Image 1: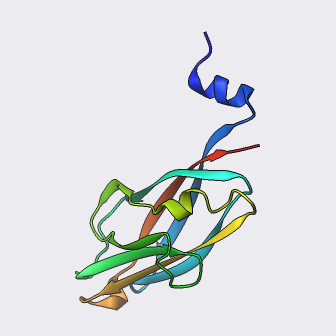
Image 2: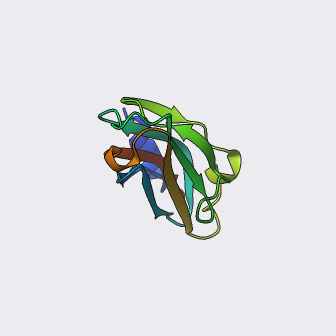
Length: 131
């Protein structure tokens, strides 16, 4: 009997995860990743393997359609060690249905000693590729 993945693949759908590593230096990071044409975003999980040092008040992540934007995910504090799901707005779920989409991420810490706020965060963007 076919499992769900086999059934989706038989229909031309492919479920995959885009891994986005983010290196935080002095409490900040910025960059982009691409959602492929036809992708539907099922969800985004964040993994902060080790607490961000330097006692920041917050280490906020935002995702948007432009640099420093919050169109897809508003500020989420990621300073603490942990793994959790992010709240993604509906517009991001279907943003790449007609063309590939570049997603911008920004990480910014507030408070504490910025010079020692170095760490790593990994985003796991779970998508279904629609043929």
